[in-house]
Length: 81
Picture 1 (cartoon, rainbow, N blue to C red):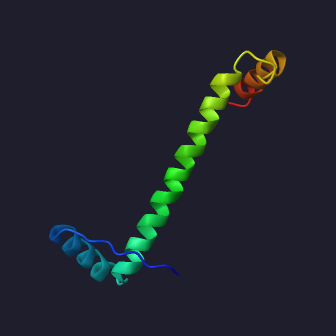
Picture 2: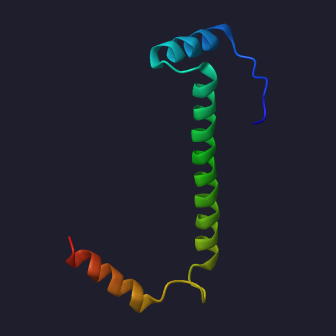
Picture 3: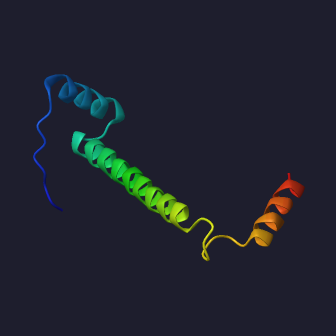
């Protein structure tokens, strides 16, 4: 495991210590979990942005969804509601 030095303001440090005490976990565990969650969210946002860019670039082109398949999908979704 790698280590990172992370200076915190006094209010943030105090809130972190309070949260750790209340949850019965170490501050390190809380910070690690928060960073892991943030990174997962960020990676998902990056992937969604890449997909959106690809979809926009391919709209109407040969890699776009077949119109008949799109219509059939829409009809199926409307029937299953």
